[in-house]
Image 1 (tube, protein in one colour):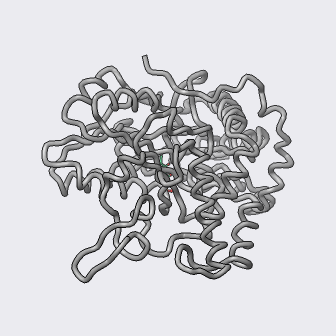
Image 2 (image 1 turned 180 degrees about the vertical axis):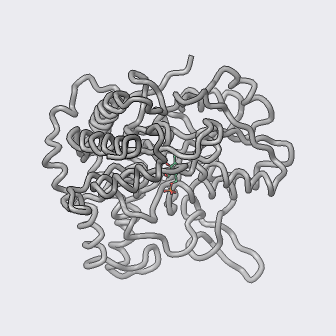
Length: 426
Ligand SMILES: Cc1ncc(COP(=O)(O)O)c(C=O)c1O
């Protein structure tokens, strides 16, 4: 049987953290929206940014702004040290063996596209297979479809069981053995909250000679992520979902596999020498970072990773889990509600997805917004999964460590009002 690696914390640290104090680091949360205190429950789309991250960005632009790797002047040296320092920090954040296994990207989407375009084009041919799961975000489907169209490779999918949103792994050996070259899977589903047994899946894939990619967009900032423990070949995440700035992300690639991957884009920085007709490449990771990189946001991301690890991702995981369990319990009291994702007691990330009877998700979101409650409704970039479940959309509340039980209760009160309005017109 497959099992999920969960943070092993014996202490209940979430109960000891002063969450009220933590929340003060997020000035954006202290505002009224449509005359109500903001309740921000759209963290799976993007997280809010604490003051230390905002300060790091300001400090960089006020004191150190310069281009990296090229100057021999003081500001350029400082900017280079800070940018490369962020790379070392990212390696530590996911326990990569080497900083040169960290490629800065714009986010998860670009990381997956880089692998599909650069590694995929070089290593796949007609008839090869790309294995995904039915719960993938479009970012982990479309780049592979483009690769399939270029190379003649075929896609196949690990099925999802149904509303409870688990992977049906009963045929995993067959699915993996059938000419599969890469298995790309999400760690935590952004719609279902399912936490997949990625370490065991990567081990199985590796034993069958299949390369693995883990989409850690929903996990990297929510629980400890250790690429050596997971045993993946590639892993991608986005800075903006883990309290960092937008436009910066991380692609981890194992050293040998990155060395065996051709460049993604051409330009400055990624070369070792250029002739009129021929170019040789820089070493990894610079080979994959053409042009002036996103220096400031890498530095902001460094501050975000420091910030999260000061609280502790085990602690964050416990706290988010408590909010999700409370939300599930309260939601299940609403008659006729349809809940998606693993049942209470099963491993689950800090989000809940649901359909209120007789009310379209877009109506839920629009009315909730009038009460200051920010939710998300729609297909969540999971259209194939929605079709499989026979729905078009869900409403989703996604939590982070600055959210509170009181906010979850506010959401439930608002949902009950919406429900009454649609069923009884009051
Ligand atoms: C599971 C998952 N993968 C990939 C992405 C894409 O992330 P980004 O838009 O930051 O590249 C998201 C965004 O919501 C996601 O939830």
